[in-house]
View 1 (cartoon, rainbow, N blue to C red):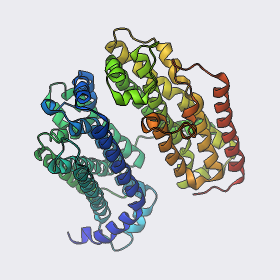
View 2 (cartoon, rainbow, N blue to C red; view 1 turned 120 degrees about the horizontal axis):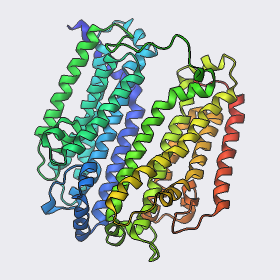
View 3 (cartoon, helix red, strand yellow; view 1 turned 30 degrees about the vertical axis):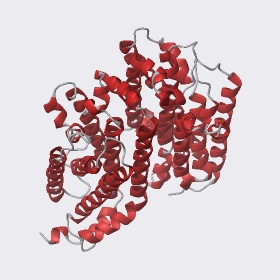
View 4 (cartoon, rainbow, N blue to C red; view 1 turned 30 degrees about the horizontal axis):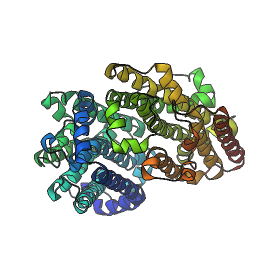
Length: 532
């Protein structure tokens, strides 16, 4: 038994060293997010506004989206913070753990790194054990840092115990999904498949919780997300659901170890589907290959944007509360007596949805960089495929996403708003308000292409700029940012319909800027080496 786990500690230190930048970024961003939103709820909302928000939160759609309302009899800033932030932070932590565990298990195995480690004096289960130790360290750091931060901030309605319960909820869910990711890494022979299963379980967990929160407590507790929310942070502060989640993580992790001990290297327990005897005609072109590699990501994001749009559309039924009774919302959007509250609120929602649409566009175009890093692009470019065609195939998929994502978000928003509103907004009116942001998406697409060509190892810079675009576009008015700073983002040039008139020249200018960046990317990509 001792030999089975030999050198686990050394491997843990090795993985922690590899993970230090990514884990630090995740933890810092989650801390920044918690600090910013807790500060907003503490300083910007009066008691009367919190009670008005409570009425909105008790809407069945809001309960399905964010979970049950706890502490309604004493609804303070701490309760609304946990209500608004907890579930979505849990989802972010789950995603972090799925990616982290997959990087150091099945992904390393696919790239041959696991075989190199096994050739050294290490135990059969040492690598998986080291990955778990790393996950425990990262999630423990997350739980403690969140608890300490909220304790120091002292938001109204919070306690020190509640602050650490909040952190423990995040850490417990992180370990559950880390264990699930490790389990799927044993079941499937590919990192892509294992990651897909991880996200399917995350989506199912969210849906089970959403249905269960409508009155079926047992169903809600089946979901890891619903289970830890039963801790009733800042209200009951119960530890039992958290310990239960940790026990579930231990059982799932143990199953992962058992399967890892019984399988062969590069194999999985779920048989891999046999491919065709001959390639489809679609794969005879770079575009067809890129479509094959990215279609699952594209479809997943379409479903995600449809769902997100539906969630935002559910808020339109209470638009008057947000527009006329909430000072924060009044600061975030322009006021006009010529338009209904729902129309004004839709402008703000459109900005948020458009900014989120940037993420899949960049992910899809940056797929080319991941192919280069994995040395797979060399196999394609060594054949009768020009670099320009190869890059163009990824740009076309990114452009397709820049059109489909706003459309999916609009469809979702329109469907739920029709149910929630007495006088719903027309579909084409909504679509017009969303699609006007397409030129801004093309600018971001162009910047991505330019970085691929000019500075391929600097694509992370664009994600930093994306964060700035989000802050300037959505919180710019609230933070009192000067107009010139919001114009550093392409979103700052887009008219907010229906309040503003469409300026064709501005939209054409944005489109031209995006095209110009793409041309720069194509020119430099044609000349540069394939950079891993």
